[in-house]
Image 1: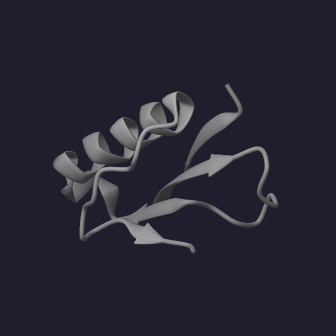
Image 2: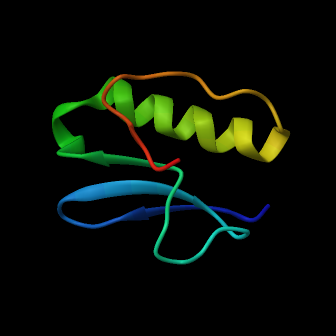
Length: 64
């Protein structure tokens, strides 16, 4: 599937195998406070696998 979600104490990121390891597609910091944004990040991971357009969320930081 080539899609990954990485989690640490401060942030959660959505990444893809065809981008450099230090980059991400979306990042959400302070994610424990934003359950709806977590859901959007998961939805976008599924959309990436399917090739569908991403859902938007103002709390998700876009890398490019």
